[in-house]
Length: 466
Ligand code: NAI
Image 1 (cartoon, protein in one colour):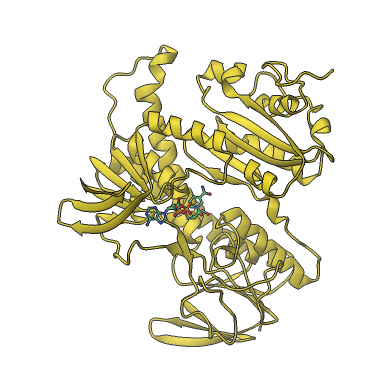
Image 2 (cartoon, helix red, strand yellow):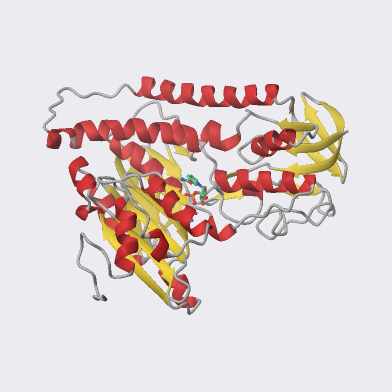
């Protein structure tokens, strides 16, 4: 009998498995596809590989000449770019495989079904075996939502298909201006596609403060992403070579012929045929019901990552895996769900954590804010990366940092520094007394914090206090 059987080997499952063996437990991990899940195989890693490759091309075409570097005859070898991406994926998935072997985790290939509080049935090539475990962790992840039940094809693709185009589409339509739509739209726009994005809502990136979203939209428009808000697709017809889309925008019906469509309208949890409903309960959207510690309604059955409430993020999934395993072991581990960082890996990157202006107002919190534009950062100017800004919000009474938003160079890394302060409940006053190296783009976070207390040095403070 296993101490823990884990269903799924994505960032939720494989991290839980490794942590469990560190605690001396006997662990099995069941996987029906490739080890590493969506993140390593068809999500975070391959998309970041193409984002980085395409950004290098964009820099060559649009930025190097500003630095006095003239490059002629730039061309793209898409096949090579794709095989580099595949090699990165292979290296990482092999790495997880090696970690499994050295940690003595049993990797069990097949499709799992949780049959009782202590048993999981695994089916492969038509034959089944029943495995027994004291605890079961469900970490089966999520899959893309289809638009109007239209099946994905070679021209109408999801985020996985969008990483495998064999040729750069002349005109690409992306449906959904969310995280995936913006990242993948950026990849293909940088490689030369004309990119149109249809977004059903009127708001752009509503999780950010409106000033920040407006700034981002201006920059993406400048980069050639044509985002049409309030656009609802009513029909899609496909021929061998193109796809015709009909959508409504401001009451008008518009027809558009494009080469490829990426559907990026959200993801749904993989919970179909995984267990009987009386064993584990689901909510009306198909997510597994869990408490704050990821325990389901059945003792000894846990669920983590994209199959449960909260953002569908690899790092959230991994931390839930660690929390559950440590709790099974008897520790009191818990997560602070308000401190989960979010990043959109466009260029510039967009990163945020904590509460935004709208939420602060709704919660009637007495707060103060500070912002600093990268245009005023010496380092950003030197490297030609002056688009964007940092905004920070803190509680006026306690001085604790409540939210940070960054749009600009190395936004993901800058955010992390502020998040360490938030997690350790360091006040903005104390944080602003930290010495930041000069010249770095991180100084912009420092200056935004100083600006919040009317002490910024390199911009005018809104209200002067001595
Ligand atoms: P999303 O929720 O971020 O964005 C979907 C967008 O599509 C929304 O703006 C929504 O209003 C719009 N939409 C919905 N239905 C529509 C329709 N019929 N027509 C036009 N627009 C429509 O979902 P997305 O981008 O698919 O990503 C799914 C999840 O995957 C994200 O929530 C995120 O948690 C995760 N993810 C995270 C990444 C990261 O951390 N960088 C990268 C990729 C995915």
